[in-house]
Image (cartoon, rainbow, N blue to C red):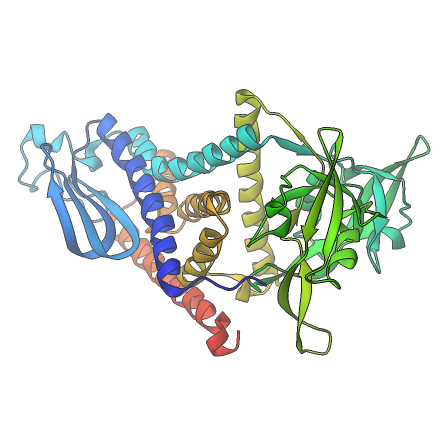
Length: 461
């Protein structure tokens, strides 16, 4: 298990995640507002007392504020419709009033508000598209190579050699597509279509629940069907990886360790974990060519079955799923969009399951947990960290689009009502809605912060 980063690294990484994402979100509002001729009085990264800032030639005060947990753009005339002054007594000239937010047409106000979440979403798309373009797309043969112990798929009648072609009616072309259909649905029975001897069979598979943990000891629960595929491919490295130091690369397919055949990634632990410090010979395929790597197995501390700490062997590799296929610019953008929508879909599913009781509210996290994960991903290298930035960016987009008064989604809900009614909601109704929304957001922030605190080791989490 990799040691957690120190406090200074965690704080630095957290600010490196949150600061740019807030800046990008608010720049979305600012740039579209400026496009429509709305004057911005202030642009702040953070809330509270100003630490530093300057005023540009347009009269916008750009500032860094004391509490770095968000930010805002304050447009002329006040973006909040409940506090906007009336045209009769605002003291502005007609020319000045023309540059205030609240006098702009409904469609322009809608686009200005929507631009913040949209910018965060587009940042996620750009990052995932760049990863796809530079790293390629992983394609894995969805043919069953083996089953895990107590495999739900095997219990449903699946056999080695079956090719999975659909899950819950959705076509499957690669084994990499299966997790998104099962990971969030533990306990649910789904129809899984397989090809066997030229025939298609539909098997009802009840998804099992499995506890998983990462190299930092963070644990979670995912749904699995207990199937292993013939893809012992390196997907990446972590820590001081002995495999990486020996010259292995992501995409290498391990076929043997000290002469023992490796059919699936699940074969590797039993050949590595019992032998910390041992020098082994790993045979791997790279672009169809067999290569031999002498590797000295690493050693890490782990908790044994009896609860005691013991040393186990580790190569420092993450599982890959198949062959890496080059991706062009257009396909990379398409993959970036589809993967971003998939992530957002898992958020909707997760929230729905919390409301239905299928998931615990303890899984909700706040700023402390984000800071913790920021430091951990930062310690794993730039690619892991930038991937985490993409995840938080789309989280910000999603949360801000929730129809809660006080958030961007709340304003959009007001505008939708205004479009239907052909006039704005009365000020008193908006005022009470926003007060309720702000109270709800504050209560949620308090709840997730307490959740974060009780999950820390100092509190026994």
